[in-house]
Length: 399
Image 1 (cartoon, rainbow, N blue to C red):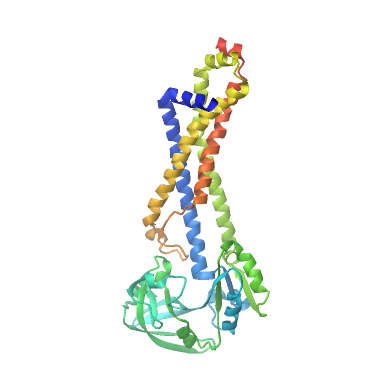
Image 2 (image 1 turned 90 degrees about the horizontal axis):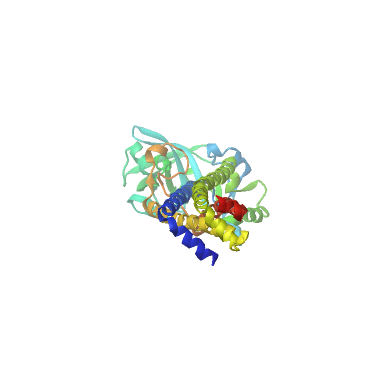
């Protein structure tokens, strides 16, 4: 009964109610869309960092961790095949990948540039390499280079390229491979990275029985710490397991802090927008102050009066909040379909950020946005409702 009465009162001044709802609607869109961008930026960084750099848990020698920036190829995980089999048997392990990274100066005639090579399983990897090729096709041999790197070297698909670098034994070695494909990851790695098969990487680096890194991927990312503990329990001495959080280091804590801070700011934006509800309801109270006195004189309790004005504000806030949150969700889906190209802004950023950034939002984030969009305006509506509740009948009738 009180709700129907409140709804009727909301419709008494349709224009004012419309602009109140519109304000909350626009604020909810801003909050939802901004949250989607924050999730997208942080999500793409962590996802690509684990994909290209760390896995969910990475295994290497302790000395490799200390010298990682030099990509040492003499710090090896010996008997890696058996270790891979043991780890793959653990509960929660999705897959285990062997990987060898090495740095070198890559040259083609007079063109020379710094680059990073990565020995991987060319046909079965996390990079979806087959679908990132702009030229060529995947096979078990050959070299696959980034589009930007191919431009620097003035090399094209089908040409031979000589790769020479320092081996795990301290000497020099080289192999000649055909450029089987040119890929486009749409990130800075396109300008300096190339892939070869694990067999060719071991042949080039003279690694006879082992690898430099093992990357473990979990079925559930939230269980990464538990997975690290299980792996560490049987690792041979000298080997170390690290989660992706540990490898990102303080930057991961910074990302988490930033996400919480931005969520607070966005909630504050919606709260400030909700002041329009306070203004609307106070205007309604002052316009109907004699009516309030009459209703209280006829027996309407303070609780019923409080609920009436709270419901009025909540109806306005909920109408704008829900419609705005849903509109923001579909706006995110629309923009996420193609993303926004930030190539000129981040093309020189040596971090795993893709040039095409896309906002991300899931059902959980939508429900949270809906909850905030409903609760914050409803709480704001209680302030003027408390004022109306405290009015005495005689005082209200005199005014």
